Image 1 (cartoon, rainbow, N blue to C red):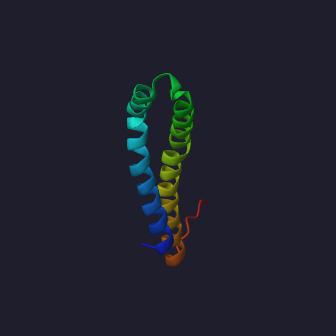
Image 2 (tube, one colour; image 1 turned 120 degrees about the vertical axis):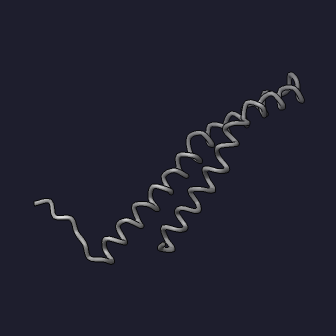
Image 3 (cartoon, rainbow, N blue to C red; image 1 turned 45 degrees about the vertical axis):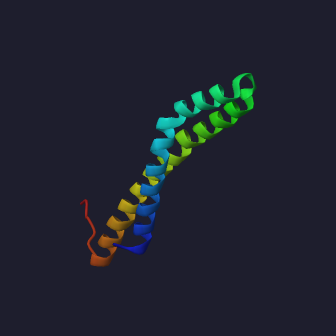
Length: 89
């Protein structure tokens, strides 16, 4: 495996592994913040909402994109190294 595709794959897996539990446990974190702070929890809730949005919209999709990029890089490098091209004539 090429070092570039290996790095992309590792980063993608790490982002998915870190992002998935964060998405899963965000509601529990909401309840913990509101229960612990009571009426003054609005600032914490805004911060948690921002974190949740970033995780849901960036971390996991970016991880899957890195995994896909690793597959594409590896496929193209193998074709390039072996000199095989598909002719669609």
